[in-house]
Amino acid sequence: MSAPLLIVKIAGDRIAVPAERVHSVIELSRIVPVPRAPRFIAGLTTLRSRTLTVIDTACALGLPESTEIAEFALVVESDGCGYALMVEAVENVESGEPAPCRPDVKLADGWKRAAQGLVETEAGSLLVIDLDMVIAGPLQDQAA
Image (cartoon, rainbow, N blue to C red):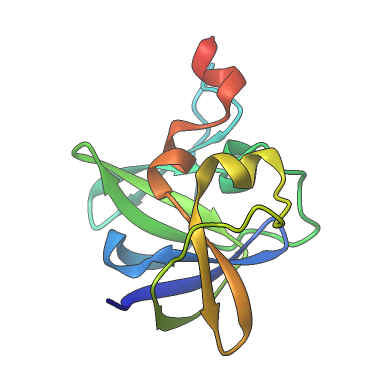
């Protein structure tokens, strides 16, 4: 069964996320830093009087910094809390059913940890990621 997937750009790569998890897409304006927060927490922002924790998505996945600025965020909810996941671009919504990653597909560790599978689109194969793994942050920050 095919599901809607939102195509976005993170760390310079086009990937897909389950569209039903995304409440809205916002343009990031003001992010207030949080002292002593883990490095992948960019800070806090508000949306309609609701405070959202802003996650540096590339950092949360342990990926190298991109040369592109993350100007947008995907607003999602997890365990009753609101998050804004930073992305460089938001492209479109496509339908597809993620299939397990083939053994010959080589992924960076961060992508590998968050991967839900691959989906074939008109633009080619895209990795589908688990947004809860992004919110959890990098493995080394979880142990601290």
